[in-house]
Image (cartoon, rainbow, N blue to C red; front, side, top):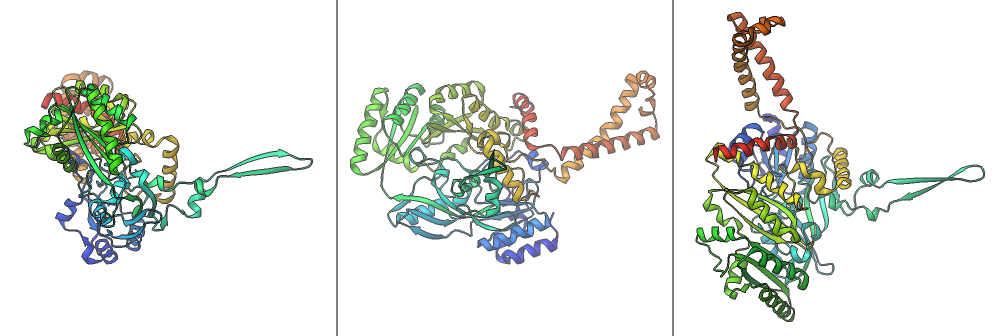
Length: 576
C-alpha cells in the first residue's frame, strides 16, 4: 500500500486531473478482458494502489524515476483488451494508463509511415488515415477499443496479418521510456545498451615477436532493439510512441464460403494460401456457428463450417482473386455464399465475443498452430474437452500459421466450478504445442512458455536487458520473466490462521492414534493432552504458518500454474 505522501507526490508529477487513488478507479484498472476466479484475486495483489494517466513521455520518465527510487511496482496498460494477464497487477503498485497520449504526430507519405502516441485507439487511427486515402497494413480484431501500444506490447496477429504479417511486421521504430527514466528511440539505441549486446570476438595469431589481435565487431545496424519490445508486455519499458508502416487505401472485397465438413474447409484454406494472396482468412467451427445461431446472430450459411476470406487491391486484382477463390471452393465441394452474407460477416469481424450471452462468462485461450496441422489440432481439442461447452475460431497469418482462439463458456458466479475450469486455457495451449504450435502471447498466464516463444537466444538477450535497465524489477513484474508471487495480506493471514488451527487438531489425533510411536521417539510432548500442550501446539502451528507463508511468497508463478493444473482438471470433473 502506497503511503499518503507517496500518492500526493505521484499526483504532483502527473497532475491532479490525471491521477486517482479512488477505489472504483483502482478496481477499473486492475482487470483485463478475461474474468479471473475470485481465489486468484484473493491470492495475488491484483488491485493497484493508484492510477496515473500521463500526457507526455517526459511525465512518464518522471513517474518511472520516482517509482524506481521508491521501489513501487509499475503496470503499464492501454485498454486491457487482451486476456493473458499482461496488464494485471501482481504486487499492487501504480497503473500507468497510456490513453491520454493519443495523438497522430506525423504522417510521412514519402516513406509511408505514421508516428502515433501509444495510447491512440486503432479504430480512430484508421479513420484518420482513411480521410487521407491511407490505412494501416494490419490491425487487431479489438481495433474499436484497443490501443496501438497495447497491441505492440502484447504482440500477435490480426486483420490483415494473412497478407502483411503480425504487429511486429508493421513497426519501424518505437519511442520507449526505460525503467531508469531514459527516453530512447529503438532505431538508435544508446551506446551502453549497444555495448551490452554487440559482442566483440577476439582472434589472435603470432607474428615474429608479438601477438597481433584481430577484432571483429558486429555492426550497430545489425542490432534490432525494436524487436525486443514487441511481445514484451511492457516489462522492458513503457512505449510512448510508435512508428507504423502504412499503405494506400484499397478496396476490400470479402467472401464467405461454407462446407459440410472441416476437412473440406481446411483443404480449401490451404489451397487459397497457395494460389491467392488474401488480406484476411478467418474460419469458425460448426460449434461456433451453432452458438451464433443460439444468440440470434446466425451466419445464414448453407453449411456449418465457414470461412471469411477478404481480398485487397484494384478491381482487376480483386476480379482475378475472386475467380481463383470460386474455383477453389467448387473443387472442395463448398458453397460461396451470397455477397450480403459476406458483407455482414465482414462488418461483424470486430465482435467475436457476441456469443458471451450464452456464458454468461467466457474463458479465452489462443495458440498458433501450423495450417497443415489444423485438422488434427481441432480433433485433439474436441477429444480433450469432451463435455465442455466451447467454440473455436481462427485466422491465418502470412507464415502459414493459424491463430486459433477458443472460447469456453462458463459462469464466474459459480465460484468453485469457474476456478476449476481455469485449467482449460492452459491445456489448450499445451495441445497446440503438441501440434508443433506456439503460444500466441505471453503475459502472465503463459510465462512458462517464454523461452520457447522468443527462442532461447532472444529470451536470454531480453532477460539481460531487463536485468540491466530494471534490476529491481519494478516494471510489470511477473510478466514474461517468471518470478515469485507476492501473496495478498489476506491470504497470508489465512495460511497462518489455518496452520494455527490445524496443528493442534493434528497433534491431538496423533496422540490418540500413534501415541506409542511418538513416545518411542521421545516425541510424546507434542501430543495435545492438556491446556499447556494445546498452547504449545498452537505455537507450533503459528510458527509453521508463518514459515509456509514466507516460503509461498518465493514460489514462481509458472511453477504454481504448472503444479496446480492437474488439481484444477480433477476438480472440474467433480464440480462441473
